[in-house]
Length: 149
Image (tube, one colour):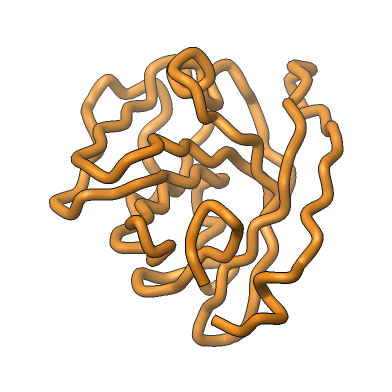
């Protein structure tokens, strides 16, 4: 990853989703893909209460928006879709910022657990189908101070 990417300024702003539930502040995250760089605006779920609520009760996500779940440590992670009304793509990220797995088009309101074999540090949730549409794949890197250069 280049130094230029690590020097990107991260904008913080508030957006509203289609359901009317106001989204929290977001930060810009860059995903370095084989085809170029994709910018995502992500809300941060970095405490237990925010991670438990996640993207529940939303009926839509703006393009290139979503949520980053930072677990603060690397280990096995299990997600689910309880009270989540839209399909999501879940990007599972290791401690180095590498996407190790993608759960695509998860089933809304399912209580089935979603996990991967590899230990991960974080998960990014974006609208279902967005990973493919944006060219995001396993092995791509997420750039932000959370992850090293």
